[in-house]
Amino acid sequence: MREPVKYEHRVQQPRVTILGAALRAARIGKRFGVRELARRIGVNAAMISNWELGERTPSAEQVAAILGALGIVGEDRNRILALARAITPGVVIEGAQTEPRHLATLLDLEAAVISATIWEPLIVPDLLQSPEYAAEALLALGNSPAVVENLVEQREVRNQIIDGLNAKPVTAYIGEHVLTKLSGSAETVGAQLRHLADLNDAASETTVRVVPFGLSNHPGLASPWTFYEMPRPSEEFTRKSVVYLNHLTCGTFVHDQADYYFHAANELERIALPPAESTAALRRFAAGEASAA
Image (cartoon, rainbow, N blue to C red; front, side, top):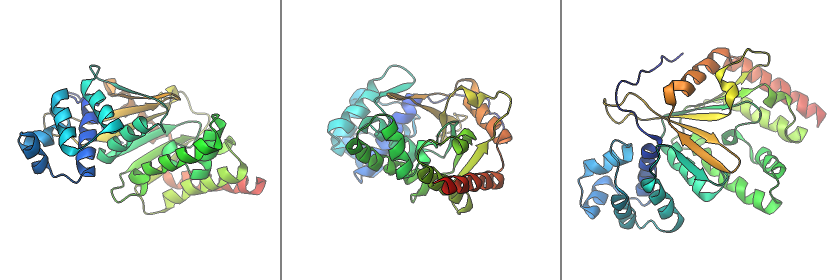
């Protein structure tokens, strides 16, 4: 169990953290080194690093200069400039998660995180959904087959945090409802549960744990969420974290006020079935779905 962290020093705001991650992803995507970019816009390399780590906040004009030097245009330019011009500490990205702006923000953030903790009480977390399971879930939301095909392809890009070259530790807590509620065809759900069990058995950074029925109230009941832990830029900062709340028509990125989600993650760690028991439960219910198919 992780120990609570006291915020005795400056804490990063989500907007600054996400902006820094977006700038870093843009630079790496264009194959620019820190020094080369710094030379192009007339600042020192340390300043570029500070901006990307979220230790300092560039002005909108400085962000525009970076994007110009990198040749970032179109929707990506508009998205990053919107982050630079935002005046609230939190970030709300309009549109469903599979919309380009929403998806790009998640990709930038997940490329920069140290780890992720996911809580999803009713459905397999989107990050762990198989293409077949994702397709059935998206169809259930009223999307056309043609749109669903495109959305599933976009979603698979996020797998970089699970099985990419730079995979990060991911712990996913799922409610027992995920195992017992048929949220798709029996064949698809059975295959999906086996996939989650395989993740636990594989030598991977991903762990799936089941939170059983019948427990007393706990802080995870409020809503699904993802807790991203970010690198700490300097000793001046205690811990950087961003909490992501996925809604049907937008995504919200907020700071973990009063360590609420940090403590919620610790509580889920305490009450969830251990990994081996979770794997056994996943395989048991997967076998049940397979026999029903």
